[in-house]
Amino acid sequence: MKFQQFSQLIAISTVSAAACLLSVGTAQAATIVLDFEGVGDFAPVGNFYNGGAGTNYGIDFSTTALGLVDSDNGGSGDFANEPSPNTIMFFDTGAAATMNVAAGFDTGFSFFYTTIGNPGSVTVYDGLNGTGNILATLVLSATPSTGNGDPNGAFDVFASTGVTFSGIAKSVDFGGVANQIGFDDITLGSAIAGGGGQEVPEPFTIVGTLIGGTAAFRMKKNLKSSNKA
Image 1 (tube, rainbow, N blue to C red):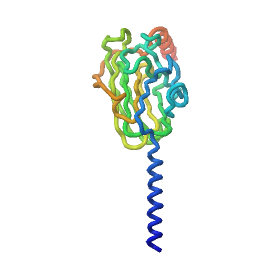
Image 2: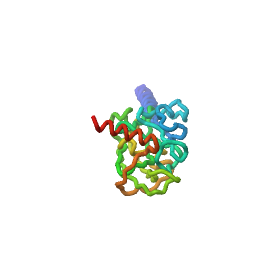
Image 3: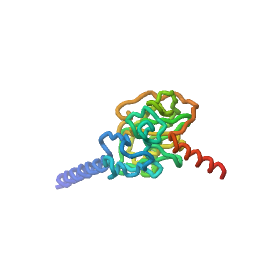
Image 4: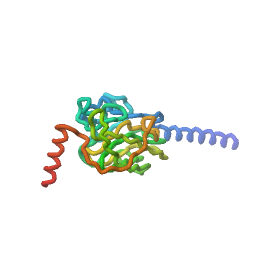
């Protein structure tokens, strides 16, 4: 009788352990690549990947995150040679854009980025909205401007970087100087951006802005006004 009770306890414990494993394993299992195509020029990314016009991955972005289309394709972006033409993600206000993944993801995280003269950083958290424990941090070196646009675009080098981590990540902060850094092919579940990569270049000291044309002029006016305050 005691042995039977003990066996039942083992069976219950085994089922409970399996249930725990299932609850822990609810994070995104497949590798997901966000290329931002279809977001639009200067359009909020927001819920594009959370029931919006894009694939529903249950991923949303803070209000600072915007799409930016290459100027050679009718947009405002002063960039070139993006890994998945013609749209990237950037922010033109604040110090960061935040990505939330309610279901969580594990294993690794990676992306392509471009930034001239201003380093950036990316931080992975186990809580939503950049809260909880830090699972990984990446310092982003400045990328060069080589003059090899497609045919235009000063931000013409996209470097890839990635990291592996333990635990379940639920948010990522993309930090840097507003309108000076852009991201593409953000990849969840892998330390290799979009399934490929390139060497991160050495820092350069050239300064530019990601927005070209009238949008750049508007940004300069805003900066000039803020300097008077």
